[in-house]
Amino acid sequence: LSRRQGHDRYDFSSSVIVGDGLAAFSEPVRKLKKRECFSQLHDYIYGDNDGKVLVLFGLRRTGKTTLIRQLIEEMDDSIIARTAFMQIMPSNTLADINKDLIHLFHDGYRYVFIDEVTMLSDFIEGGALFADLFASSGMKIILSGTDSLGFVFAGDEQLYDRMIMVHTTFIPYREFVSVLGIRGVDEYIRF
Image 1 (cartoon, helix red, strand yellow):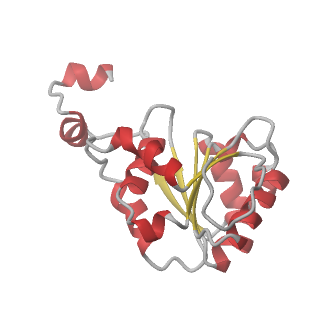
Image 2 (image 1 turned 60 degrees about the horizontal axis):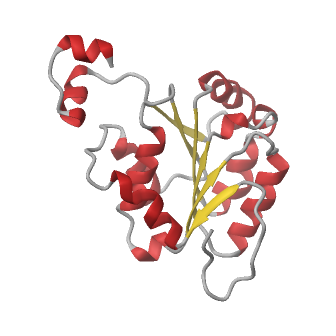
């Protein structure tokens, strides 16, 4: 965990990567081709979203974290200095994440990626926290996870009209060939 100069050390409840750690985190995806839905993440980070969060969801191994890494990799230094990546751990609660986000907000971080957020047992009941407190205060928050039903319930209950949903599971054949460079319907089906 690297911290910016002039800031006190803070023991995060979740696993948090900031500063120079983000370069190492994003470097492995530097040469990978981007999925078509990458533009939605890019537009969210660089556009006006009126206090909404972006939800990136899909089955395991469909590129959610890779998309996040690719977006971080192309950010310039001024945005990287205000960016954090949080990895939710099984022991984390929404209260833990709230404390971490408050600290990040006060330290000037405005771009926060929260991976595996649906692992939080109280996510569905308290998911509005991300939009109501943080996104409405100017933070750009991208939530990712595999539990699409959790996101649906959170959308119905807490996040209703305050989330932009990006689904990664379905990959059309055209995109499969473009991104992976592999041709053949048999290979497409196997993957």
